[in-house]
Image (tube, rainbow, N blue to C red; front, side, top):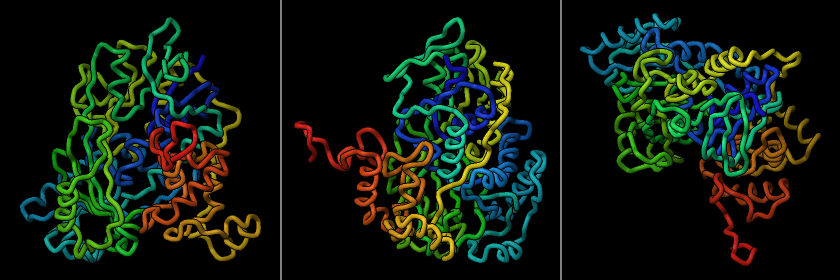
Amino acid sequence: MYDVVIIGAGVSGCAIARELSRYEVKAVVLEKALDVCEGTSKANSGIVHAGYDARPGSLKARLNVEGSRKMAALSRELDFPYKQNGSLVLCFDEKEKDKLEELKIRGEANGVDGLCILSREQLVEKEPNVGEGAVAALYAPSGAIVCPFGLTIALAENAAVNGVEFEFGTEVSGIESQECGYLVHTQKADYETRTVINAAGVRADEIHNMVSHMKMKITPRKGEYLLYDKKAGGLAVHTLFQLPTALGKGILATPTVHGNLLLGPTAQDIPEKDGTDTSREGLEQIVEKAALSIRHIPKKDVITSFAGLRAHITAYACEQEKDGGAKGDFVIGEVPDAPGFIDVAGIESPGLTSAPAIGEYVADMVKQLLGLREKAVFTSRRKGIPSMSLLSDEERHRLIKENPAYGNVICRCEMVTEGEIIDAIKRPLGAVTTDGIKRRTRAGMGRCQSGFCNPRVVEILARELGREESGIRKSGEDSWYILPSKEGGSL
């Protein structure tokens, strides 16, 4: 029997797994996809929010600020990209400056340090390419950017090194209450456990409704994005928000930790929980609204568009009883009519920022429930894949001398080598798909978007995994590059 079954290997599930791995605990993460970070966590803005948005006193406000404060140290400990570039909330109407002041007061109540309101002149000094209509801004120096894949993968790898099991391609089909806990059914096996943690993202309502009479409904909120080549990355120094609306923080413009420019997201509630398609209307809306924040955005430098889904709770019978006690807050806690079943639901923005704090919060909850004891030995540090594009010449020569595969460039756009790709496959919870390689090494994330390097990546994956190339997928079970024939060969 397991002590804990965690459902979902997104950033929240992986953060919880990592914190639980500090204890003497038998835990497993069940993920329907073939890798970590395949849902909401893979398609977001990569923003570490300062914490001035959420209602003071809410769980969301508390975990946002705590998570933001933990992120820099965590990035050093687990070796993932992070940069404190600061953020600006832009105001385009003199009559709305009071809204900036309201945000500042809210942020200070939440414990955000260093907030100040900038005049137009001060704003231009900090952000030379800011839109001509911006008249003032709220400046949050603690705002930052992070690699969402890097964060999630690092948390998962460290959890695995410390003993947490991960089962991929394992979709939960049902949960039964038992005398000593729960029996979790999947298409592969059944898992007996004392406790269940529901971190299933946009499907957290489906998991919750398997055990509780107090029904939950999550409506996916689709956000579309445009990603620009690194040539455009310098157009924004800070993360540029616009004054928020009821649907969120609006269209932002931000540099990424890898030097690109990112614009988005839109906000559209949709019925499909796999609806990650982009639309002409959505992308045109991004371009139109982002032009208010930043001047001279080059249309020709777009390299890709994508969409992500936020887990927006639209109905929950017991919402007022949950921590935070207000609509729109995170739903984190033991379900009243399902002892030992813990929801981690409605983790939309600022969920990525809050993840380190969510991990500690839920792990402490489980510790109290099960009486867990800390391990005598916990491996807190993790070393990421060396990036040849960022190393000094001396460091590159040393690596190539140790392993000549580091001298064989596979992805020329991002200068990713065969050695890095092999490392991504061989390390804990190694990549088994081309998207897994992309998220761990950036092979295929450059201007050509894998147009040239992908065949070599497929070849390396097949060789290192001992499979035929027809057995290599892009991401999911049915995302074949070479279709298997009915006769057993390939097409």
